[in-house]
Image 1: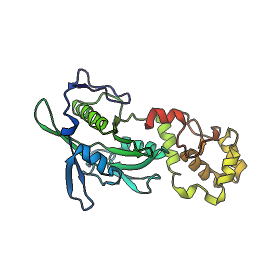
Image 2: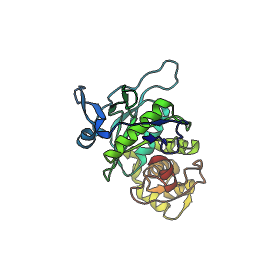
Image 3: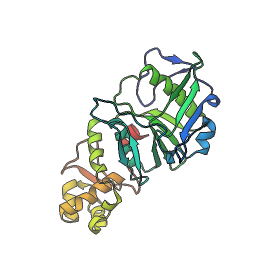
Image 4: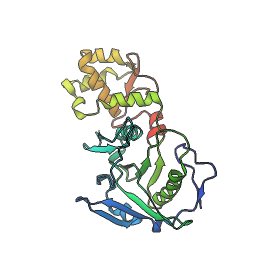
Length: 276
């Protein structure tokens, strides 16, 4: 029996305790290249299928009256588009895309199917995001829009997916929405994520050298070259982690920017809180 703690700080629904099936009794359904649905034991699919390469097993719904519908996120990590169904999910894709350890991303790649031990009913859940890490770790995640307790159905699914993922060395999480300031800063930097900005105008080295010692953002841009030419390169370096800044404060001309480690995508505070 599992008491769901709804990982990453999202509280469980009060008094929600569920029995979960044995991991070997959980099935996985995913789409083949031609769109045909394939069903296998979850334990087999998790180790034998590259979930990061799969198309969504189910389309994101279009809900009449909502201001936000399904869309596409171009991933700097994969060089491909990843579908998303909400602003909250799009934000989490941005954060994962910045993580230097993430090497693969996909949306809704698998449907997990199990028989509820209590009622005997067949239940299903399609997690929203899959991420593959360079060290082989894998993450299945959902992206709630707020930090309130999960509803019964979502919390029950979180308990089952948490156990099923743990059995195969994966992690399941309900990812916290980031702070509004962090979200705004990451969204801004994401506009400069494309590789074309890395050395635009041949300014990459000059920009990095301008911040060899910590320096105000605009002063460093001016030292590297003409400001309007240097800023896109600077923002790309902040996106990729070759330069770092405190993203918990609004980015501005006086933001202190310093050299980052090669291939580091986030300052440590942001990485620990929001991406892993």
